[in-house]
Length: 115
Image (cartoon, rainbow, N blue to C red; front, side, top):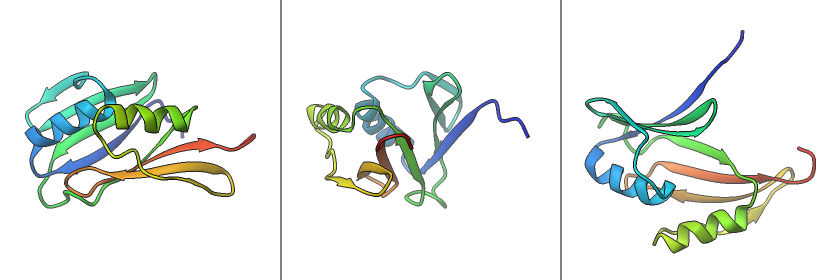
């Protein structure tokens, strides 16, 4: 199997409210609104986040974003009036976990050493 692109899908009930929160999270508007009920942020050359209106699955999504500077990421979140989460150190990464207003979990992780 050759994977050429990856999207994390985050389900929300109130897309308009979620758009405003995720614009603060990423510090910019969505890159694409390809259809009604869907917004996309292109985060890397081959990956990103899709926000989808889906009340039945809202609040149950889990996403991990690997970052190169966790302290800077948490400080950026705080500067945009978001809870940056407490930084915790695990065996292979340091991480901070936050939740959007609907309860979806977003983890920012910075690898330790050569992970």
